[in-house]
Length: 100
Image (cartoon, rainbow, N blue to C red; front, side, top):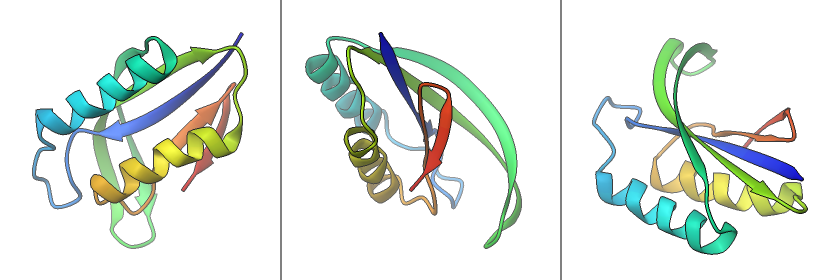
């Protein structure tokens, strides 16, 4: 069994909260496409080249699948990056970190 994770921020870069409807749509997609997911509360910090020291609170969506490939997960991360208006989105495939 393989897994992937996508870290999805709870707030836009300007500090405004992301609407519950956006999370509902993502969660329905993951549940229908992959027959389920696990959502974890996540917090962390990093140094952004554009914004300096940043803290964030996110949901980490973990999905278990028979096979996983980077292109599949990168597509989900790109949607999050666009609609959540993020500079970068981190995703994980079997313990290895990637960014879009």
